[in-house]
Amino acid sequence: MPLHHSSGSEDTHPMSFLGITLKNPIRGNRIKRAVGLRCEVCGCEEYLENLVVHSIIKEEEGCEQSPGSMEPFLLVLCFRCHNAIHAFDAPRSSQEELARQRPEPLRREIRRILSSVPRRYTPPDTDMEEAYIVACTSHFRFGV
Ligand SMILES: [Zn+2]
Ligand SMILES: [Zn+2]
Image (cartoon, rainbow, N blue to C red; front, side, top):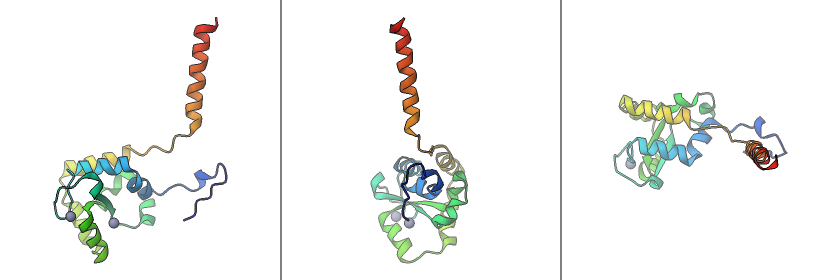
């Protein structure tokens, strides 16, 4: 969807939760590591970049969920299984069944990753503020 980039309007177009989760490489990579860098369907070990965090539900539905509650709707998949799941339009129930097979500690870990990582984009003003404080501090130190 088009982004309206008139100044200051970003807040009226919040990125959906899934967008943040699945396109945020840090979060995605943490989830991939949490499951042991394996495809959750075929079990093959893969490099980080050869795994995808697939979402079982549609992005619109994801918006309504709190981040931590998304755990049952994510699967870490290798490219082959990911392609297959989309190509055969695997029923949502069987995908959710796979997610439910995770051991409880892993589910907790994924929930933790989901709910702890995404900070809202830190506006540059914050850095400016800090720079200002630092400048003032050094002014104090040297200016007296
Ligand atoms: Zn696989
Ligand atoms: Zn997918």
